[in-house]
Length: 240
Image 1: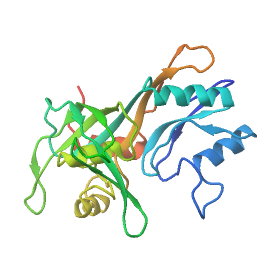
Image 2: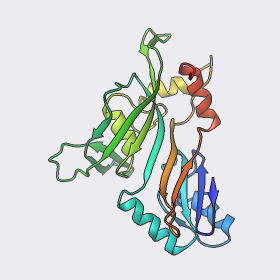
Image 3: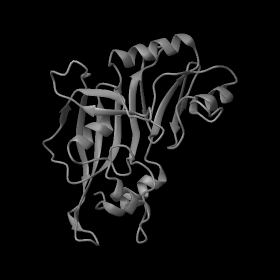
Image 4: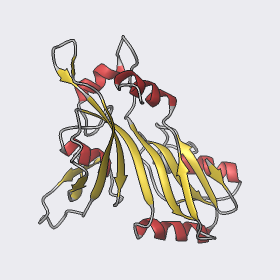
């Protein structure tokens, strides 16, 4: 998406981890960036394996520190596109819900919403804007279905923040294998008529920050990948 002497911005495909994981060598985004640059690179922030979109890589230690400081001080703007099940109310624009990380018995991490007075809760703020709504329709089993395409801006960078916040409103992200509607996800993945959805519909769409060397505004955008754009076009009314 963008490259200069200090910064590399890439459009990460879904299914690729941001950084190396135990038992897998050479296929993370950071590994690929290091191979491309021919020298060690620094990952500025992270995206879940299941999420596609903008990811920043720093070419220099000074750039890495500057950009990470911007993220830590919440001076960046990060907006995602998410397609959820249900009709999102236009007046529900702010999700201010503390989140708590915990481990399943098998060691896999999960996140849940907790009360404001929970000592383990981390403040988490998500802003939601409705981009498109589908009409309500009935599926083959008579269940009423609808879809909402959302622009989601996070003011805090908690693990699985968008996924958990949206699911806590009863409208999980389509294709989410951790917090979603698992049976419905299976049905969407094997759709015979129309277009199937075989991944989570969450994409890091826009990112704004300051250039680490010049301080000039840096604005990046990664359009929806083809498989998500096709599914959105199938279930949502045409844009006017």
